[in-house]
Image (cartoon, rainbow, N blue to C red; front, side, top):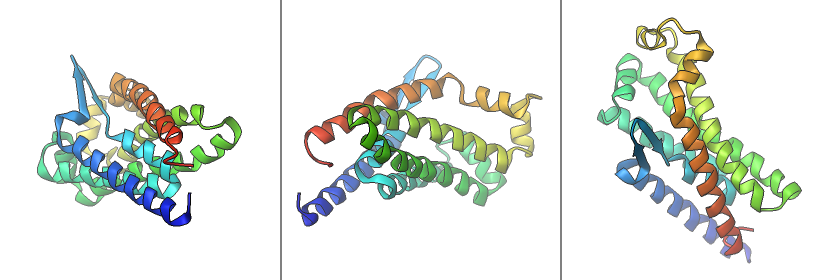
Length: 199
């Protein structure tokens, strides 16, 4: 693959993953509702970008994810986000952006070294899991740091310690999101390697 063709392929992948993320964010396709469980697939394009485009791609698509999350707060489509926005708009923007950018960046940083040790197949699944796990971890941690002392979050905590609140806050949804991201990202990442869309 020549350098120009490689750059073009990366640009096309970046555009495609950004478009997929936007579709997932603004249509029912981005959410699977099973009874009381709601699983979001929005982190999957971030994970695939980390695999295909490395640190910069993971961070860039993570930033798009963060922006869509913030816009949903502004538009009021997320009641939780809209409440946080009314408390502190700057902190809400940081909460939406920072965890998603960091999740994509760290996943991209981890993927490449893993492929050198384990080949391509297993690291794609690991990156899928890691992206969803880090997104959840960074989001809940940032939430507690920025909003943990507000009446709104203190009311949600109901006297629980910080760790218990974080576990209860993410709930079983996070487990299913990690599972979905692991399986789907692993399958897509390996398909991209087989198609030689990425090295």
